[in-house]
Image 1 (cartoon, one colour):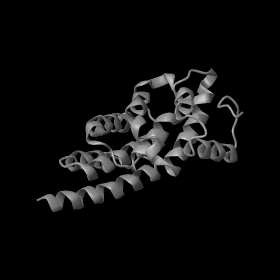
Image 2 (cartoon, rainbow, N blue to C red):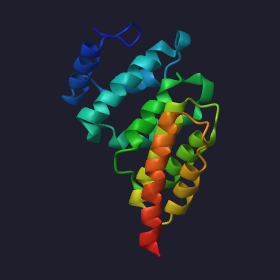
Image 3 (cartoon, rainbow, N blue to C red):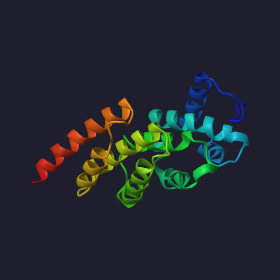
Length: 177
């Protein structure tokens, strides 16, 4: 049996992903690992990798669990630093149910604006904001302001993502006028 307590290889992540997607393993096992406390949050980190693979392979399996996943973004230092990045990676390219859209957008804005967050978290959070704005009206002005707030001293990757999102926001705002 593979546990989330030990270093897993990519092959093992994919094996676990297949087991979850084929429902040979209960998805709750993955969620238990995501919400567990372990030394240096190793279990959460590896569960986060598997979570992203599950999203990419069988995203509908996670749909009913989105509200529960969002609560991980409120855990702060009690979760592994990779978890917000994984969650925003999931939320940046999927349909967000209307009842969760405001919460997802607000959490993404908060994580983007927190300059203490890693660049990957901030970038994925901004992409998540763009995704929600593309699904629900009225959010493009805020996405424009967020993308426009990226500074020249920010990383090249952040500037590139911000520039792409800024151009999209400008197009969307022009269409709305």
